[in-house]
Image 1 (cartoon, one colour):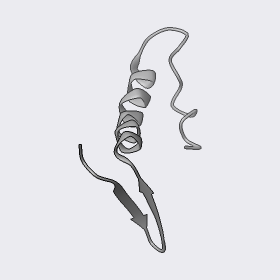
Image 2 (cartoon, helix red, strand yellow):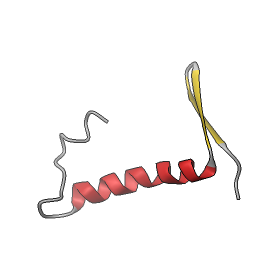
Image 3 (cartoon, helix red, strand yellow):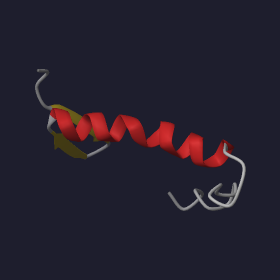
Amino acid sequence: MPGPLTISHHESAVAMDHPEAERLATVPAELTYLLEIPGPHRINDAQPAPL
């Protein structure tokens, strides 16, 4: 199993274990799915803006 991952931007760094990194990698795919699906569960373009 891969080891921990460190993400940094400017001065702060965040370390996460492999399961957390895998979950983080699924977020863009899930967000894309929710933007593209038809019907009542679709989110509109403005809803992810605060993220």
